[in-house]
Length: 294
Image (tube, rainbow, N blue to C red; front, side, top):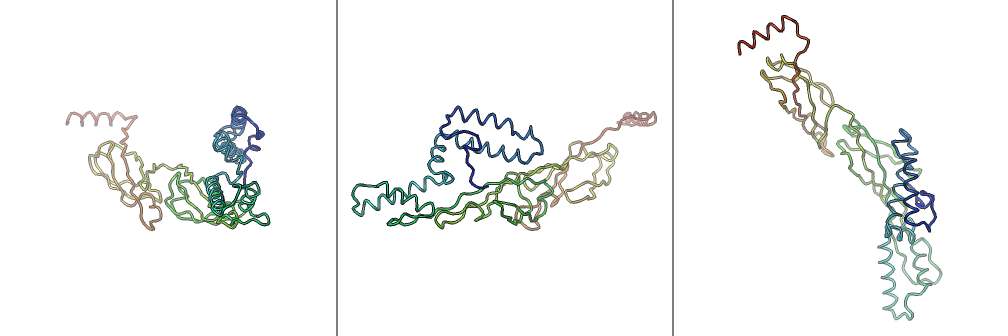
C-alpha cells in the first residue's frame, strides 16, 4: 500500500500517449486476470494495481494532477488553494513582481517536509493519503465478532470485525494510512469487505432465507421436522394441509444486526413439497382410493 508509480506498473514512460496507455493496460490485464490465474494472490494484487494505474492515467485530468503532485495528486485541490492563499497574502503585503519562482519553490518545499532558508511562508500541513484494502471473508466468519491481524506497509494492525458486516461495506481505521505532510495527520485505512456466501441461506440485510423440502405425507398430515438455522438445528411444527410454497418465520434466527449486541434478524423458511416417486402397487392402489374419496 506504499506509493505506487503508475507508469512503472503499466511499463510505460511519462510521455506515453492515450493509445499507449490503453494497449499496455489491455496486455497486462489479460496476463494477470484472476480468471487466468486462479488462487494466485500475487496476480490478483498485480491486477488491482494495473486497474488502479489505468483509472488514473487514462483520465487526462487525473493524469495531469498525478504528473504534477505525484503520490499527493488526490490533494491537488487543497495544494492549489493553499498556493493561491499564499500568493494573495504576499500580494496584500505589497510584494512587487507577484509570485516568483523562488516563492514557488519555497511553497513546495514547505509542503514536502523542508523549507528553503529565508522562506517567509508558513508550513502547510496536509493529511496523508488514504489506503484502500479489500478483506475477503466467508459468511460464517461475520456471524460472530472476531479479531484479525492485517499487514499494512509492513506493519501489523489488530482490528475487531463486528458481527453482521455486509458485503461491500467499508470501515475506516483512523490514522493507518499514508504519513501526513509537514506534520499533518496520517491518512486512514479504508477496508472493503467482500463476503462470500457458501451457505445454504440467502442473506438480505439481517434476515436469512432458506428452502426446506417437505414430504407429501408430512404436508398433508402435519407433524414435526428438524430444520437448519445458521447456528444449529431447531424443531419446527408443520401444520396439517400445508401448501407448497408456504413461508414461515423463525423470529430471531436470522443474522446478527451490525453493532447491535444480541439482536438478530429473522429466518424465513419456504416449504418445497416433494411428490413421492417409484410408488409400489399398494401405494398406487391407496392413492386411487383416496382420489375416489375426493
